[in-house]
Image (cartoon, rainbow, N blue to C red; front, side, top):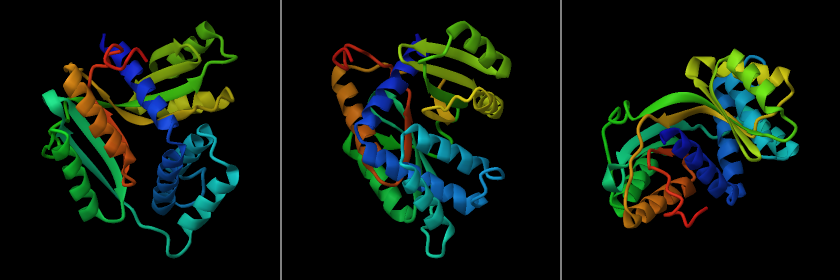
Amino acid sequence: MAGHSKWANIRHRKGAQDAKRGKIFTKLIKEITVAVKGGGVDVESNPRLRLALQNARGQNMPKDTIERAIKKASGEGAENYVEATFEGYGPDGVAVFVECATDNNTRTVSNVRSYFNKYNGSLGKDGCLQFVFERKGIFLLHSEGIEEDDFTLEMIDAGAEDVEFNGEHINISSAMEDFGSIQKKLHEMNIEPIEAGLQRVPTTMKETNEKNFETLMKLIDVLEEDDDVQKVYHNLEYDEALMGGE
């Protein structure tokens, strides 16, 4: 089922990222920098910064690291990042959408293209995946201490489309326009998400064989390792057998 695969996919990638905490902090600091550059240091008037700080806290980034990132971003000589996206296909036509923030777009384009070429993929034209992914509000929470029925009703009232309890985590999805109302409700309930944001959720999933599955995982990993890459989305059908039963 696509919904199951979607959440299993998110959990798998989340687990892979947790093993690279230094990389996560680097990407979070870059997001803080972009947010400050675009809207200033006032959290109340800068929703993007508010979200970036929330995600930083959700990943247990030290408070002094967060404060240094804000101070550096607001000062003279701070890095200027340009946001860029890349759309392409991996083996078996699996869709891969890449979001970047870079201070050297030429370098980023060259690197991303080389990764696709190396792992049997190809970059497509901007907009080629517009019908493969849709923007959704996505929240990942700890489930400890939360009563499932009452919480689910609260989230549905706030605009959630889907609320799933998966062991120690809760996954919430919403239409893009309802993201803010759910964020506000969680704040009122004094619940700090592990991660929240607008993500690109696949509308259809794609299956592949074991060989191509491994190749695509290598493509995703090398993309996520690149300092210019912030997020990678794909529509590969998650297969526990191919992942060794993770």
